[in-house]
Image 1 (spheres, rainbow, N blue to C red):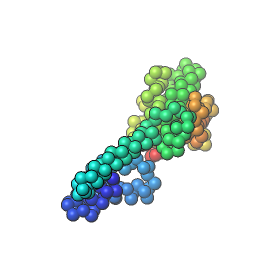
Image 2: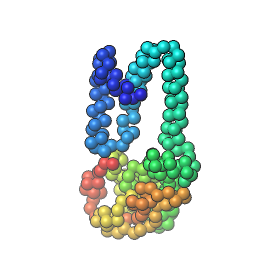
Image 3: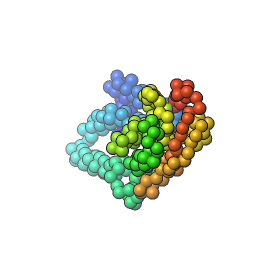
Image 4: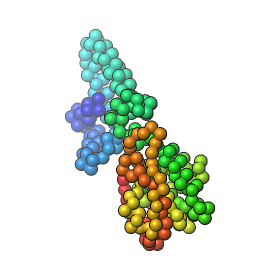
Length: 246
């Protein structure tokens, strides 16, 4: 249906006045394809394409004999219902984790596995914080390597008495590192090599895991949690170099 909508914008005579809308889809699509963007980046464009495709399809059905028109409308309704059910099955996280259904859905939509383990991550960080001396706990910060970790800390952390996450990723960098800066950092999602280059002391303090045993970015790419102290350079200098995008 969305292909029909794109055809309408570019090739149907009375759709040509909406051609800029077609280009608003086509140009970002090509750019995202070149940049290897995720498929859902273009999601906001599809309602307009589906609407245009419905116009074209409605005209085609209206031109048929009454019997054929009823048959086509029935097939269309059936296809929409089946397509909607399949989409729900693989887009919404409703399958029990590690069930056969979940494994199939996870192959189609690999974001599912990245939704697993955030409460456990925060619980582990809270445990590390509780193990620190009282003086260190009073000036502790939590440094997160990506927005998933930072978001989980901000969402679940208050229940454990944790401070807000600090991170150099995307717009998190704009929020800074706090005033006064933390003296002790619990670090998630950043390599040991980077930390040892930038801190005088970094100690392995824990590992990221989840209760389902699901392997995802947190458990495979950067599963280690560290406690780091004594930044080798002033915070403003470090922070200027710490901005990055993902």
